[in-house]
Image (cartoon, rainbow, N blue to C red):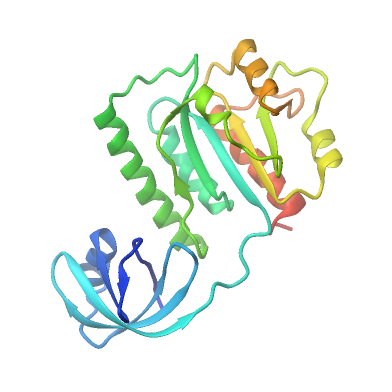
Length: 246
């Protein structure tokens, strides 16, 4: 049975309304009709068996027949802070990070961030990234769509992370601390936030700010990876060490 995702607060009194791209996919692509059954998931991972009771070009109304509690969630929570890269690299990062089990993606501006976007452009980008995350979630079989946060300045992303988080900033100029060492010294860890710089990397001043906020600056070794590669590499390693891979 195909799975579809419910928007927040769309369930009420045993029924639910499906809108947007999900409704379009149900009605125009799959051509499902009144009486056909669906599997639905909400933002918390609750699963519903539902039957279509009405449909139009813009929305589908369903009756909820059965509700099941979330299955076991991911064993680790990983937050990816990604400096906004050039062109459409962020689309790729969102898609692949979703497939690799990221919980939250926070795009941010740093000193060497190249794209300059106004509020309207940022709003449209975020809508697209959320759509990409949704499609990637459906494709890979995840139960919960990762959160795509609003764009932040670098200083803001350093704030308010509790001591329960292992806080990592990747820096190619770090000579003394390797990722393997940090993971070995801190395992197992259930919550991790990682910060990835733009094409030009972080400045030394930004790394110092992050250290003062409790982040550990680490290196992946002698190779310098692209901004669209390095975060995914680290996600893969974390999922292998502490998560669902392997």
